[in-house]
Image (cartoon, rainbow, N blue to C red; front, top):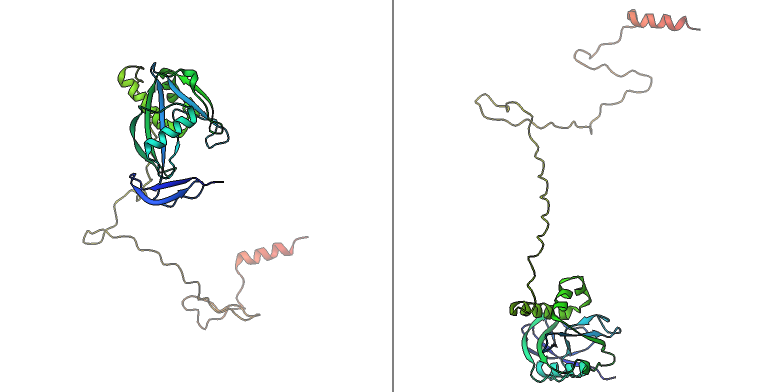
Length: 267
């Protein structure tokens, strides 16, 4: 099976001096050339070609015929070859519409347009590339591009389709579309709450300057008092507690003595 070889290009369309192979990864910074031809009839209808379902974007409609340029081909030669292979139409007299880079597919797309008066039933499809075709009036094509039906149009043809609509509107062939629906305004985010100090005068010093409250120092829990030996009561604490012993001969408090009597009289 022969490999399809392409020429490599920079993003601005200048040759990069290297070769690319179909199906292989394209190195960063390099692009390959794609040429498309949009065909319109003298009565204003647009030719739509349906891609074969086994290809990428299979089953989608294209407003142009085209493909990748082979090694050594110029944009005009590539456009005429692809148009003849996919539709059987002779591209003599086609007009260049410029080119633009497509960073998503790493390609530089050259666009051409052709106005012809050939019989509409003379289109010849290429097996494995195209499977159907139809001639669509400009008004119907404009409605397709303006509605959800545009998702049935190949991404490669949407850019070209919008340009056809714009030119038809400028020439008065189709009515201009009214203003677009205004976008919904997004709700503004809620403000961030601000922590405020409690009401009242701010603390001040004697000379009238404001002072900030002192930060509380957490207690040091690493130092603990020594534990008393088993069988002994802990040493008394507090001022004047050093050397003081509990008086065992002192009578108990009144409340404690009454509580003892209540417990003794129980059942």
